[in-house]
Length: 298
Image (cartoon, rainbow, N blue to C red; front, side, top):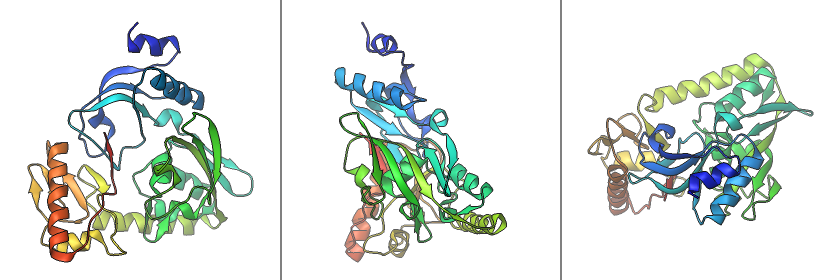
């Protein structure tokens, strides 16, 4: 029995040889051996369980906005939490619950429509809820931890847990979930009542800032480096004269030096080579070590 046939005996719709670049915002990445888009927690658990039985490594992706897949692809199973895993609902006491595949932008819009404030700074971050929780995404002095109440998580033993905000151990672009194998499946957000017009105005302001300062017209993986010791990585890169630097079609954006953009048919090898060059130059000239913010599937 083949691996695909074995997955099918468990009623899982697993695909073979899927191009990952179609699911990642950088538009880079080779082929995943196996790929599934589950619609229920039970399907996620089943996919993980079978992967372990078959000794297959598994990877989780959401909106793919902060992720690099290598040119040679992924040897294992990619579990894609997308539209089929994106329910958003209003709960009592000004709480919103969203599944991991829901886009953060859509959750912000839903909150605004309910007259609930607190997520405005997150509007426009090109992440899914799961990805945003995983790395504690944030912008403009706001982070997702500021509004998270609880996080539902499938742990390393394939069991469902619910962690509080404190238990989630959020830090700067970090969380409990980065250090523990498993899958974020949903989260609840505690928000405050406000006027819809005021909420929308804040969202529009944050989006305008993004459109003005960031190269949204190009494929990218978003902000490439974490801030070192509260300095802005983009300012350090700019100060070192690296704006516009490139390795083939991967380029340091002229608009925002914190973004590496794909101007054509860039590869993961190009991306990594440029990252290494930036890190070397910045360290040599400033003494700061730039740490990657993006995740690499490997």
